[in-house]
Amino acid sequence: MVGVMHSHTHTDAYPSPTDVDKADNPLLQGWHYLILSLRQEAPVLRSYRLDDRVIAEEAVVLVGPH
Image (cartoon, rainbow, N blue to C red):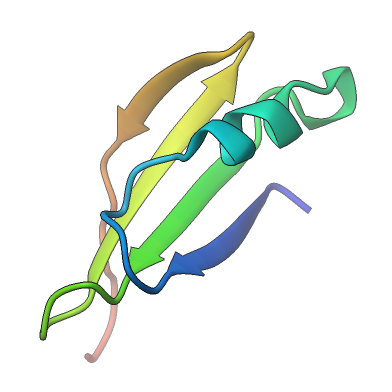
């Protein structure tokens, strides 16, 4: 496993304080955190690294037919 994905149904695709708290675990260091926001009509997908409580966004690249 290299990461986790979850949705924010009413907020932006940005890590919440709860997301950051849960990621503050040495076993989860280096994971990718994909967040899908359903707040707008068109879904928004963003990805982050959450290491040592630092939020760093990373690019999402879709490959293949969509």
